[in-house]
Image 1 (tube, rainbow, N blue to C red):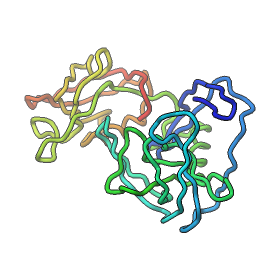
Image 2 (image 1 turned 60 degrees about the vertical axis):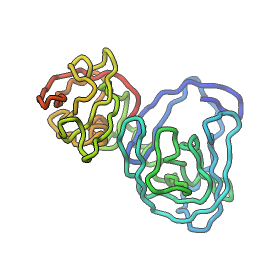
Image 3 (image 1 turned 180 degrees about the vertical axis):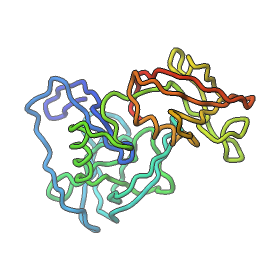
Image 4 (image 1 turned 60 degrees about the horizontal axis):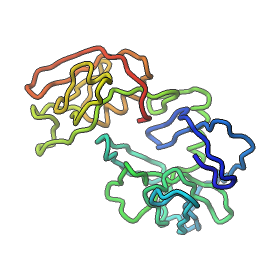
Length: 262
């Protein structure tokens, strides 16, 4: 990560994240004395002027800025992940008419006094919005700070993961025409591919198989699989169930490895 104020570049690690709110806590290595942003925890109001700062288009360099106003509060959206096939429902959001683009996710939404009132969301390279073209959204900063405090205190939950993330080593597949997944029309998370040497591959799972359970809990979609993975850490042993393309059910115990956040 690069601080555009002092030009210094730092490495960072993920301390934890909340998948249901699209918030992560990062820890910079070797950083000290950095200038902090002014925070405004007052509730956003419809009509107030705002500026969304970020990295529009992912080009780097000087942050970009897009002006606009708050058009609604307490909004809900569905964002789908084009890489994993999963989706997440985000709620309590600030809606703005500023042109938030891919790459702006994680940037600041500031008010006319320069105080940060939110964090831009659902504009990353992987996530796309469902029927929300032309609108931008931000997580209220008060909500983000509450999540950050829980992560820093080591308080995980059903949606909040603290520590290193566990990884199965599966790539997404796509549902077939009848809305189910897998060639056998089995409900679950369709496997588009596996990472060689990782837990799924070692268990014998291959592309075209459908994961149906994890840790004794039913998996009915890629989204559910991602949600269940939040509760695990690298080194945990878990039982995974799947159905192959011939319709044969299998189970195996796998040791999870370290991977990217969900």
